[in-house]
Amino acid sequence: MESVSCNTCGSSDFRSLFSKSNHRKETFHIVECKECGLVQVNPQPSPEEVASYYSEEYFLKRSDRGYDNYFSDSVKNEIARVFGLNLKDLGFEVWENSLPESKRCLDVGCAAGYFVDYMRRRGWDSYGIDIAESPVRFAREKLGLQVEQGDFLRWKSGNGQKYDLVTLWASIEHLHKPRETLEKIHTHLKPGGRIVLSTCRWGILAKLQGTSWRYLNVPEHLYYYSLSGLISLCKEIGFSETAHVTYGSGMTTKKDASLLYGFAKKIADPLVKVLDQGDMMALCFEKTE
Ligand SMILES: [Zn+2]
Image 1 (tube, protein in one colour):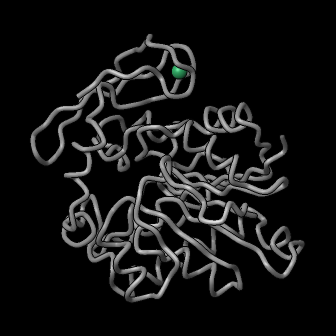
Image 2 (cartoon, rainbow, N blue to C red):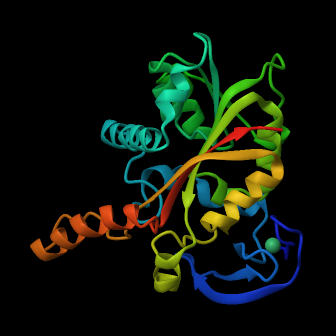
């Protein structure tokens, strides 16, 4: 475990928020930067230590934290449905239609390549990279995708070509160096190219629920951005925001839910979206500098 300075602003001045234990009975401290407000696990386990949490088990067994079976068709279809919704909410299609026929995209943290596959079907020259070995093998062998295994921060673009679109779906919260990753993405985008990212959102719902908040998965999730915190970080790097959406009331879909619960969820989910208070967020930025 290593104490780190704030990844957004470099400050080492933190306010302690709370501690939380994981399923291995290890305790992690969640702190908030006094300078910029970024909420983070600190001290942090090293990348090597975190790697042990992403064994094949993460994608196959731990349904409460990882996936029931990430490689099943039903998970793949559900994930594709969420991609579609997010892109629609971000007004993606209008921009996509303004691009020339040949367009390239890269999904960073692509796991089994479901978004790479989704974009290939949409007619893009589609690539992906992920640090975890088994999902990358699945993406290549079962789906025949152009996906590389490795650390994006050490990755070199094969032929130096730049991308129209880079995506980071529910990945930034897992990274040790999110700012550096966004900066590197910026250098690999064409002028006017876009980044689409989604992450859990440190906002009113998270604050109200504290340690029981559904996305407070330690230590897999190292960073918890507020909407304004993530927007100002991206602006500093040279992006301008084109759109964002927040969604999710925190009420999960339960098989044995009462009618009342189902009714409350039907109201809560659209309401938080309209009020821009969801605990998930998807954002789109354009490279302007
Ligand atoms: Zn900070």
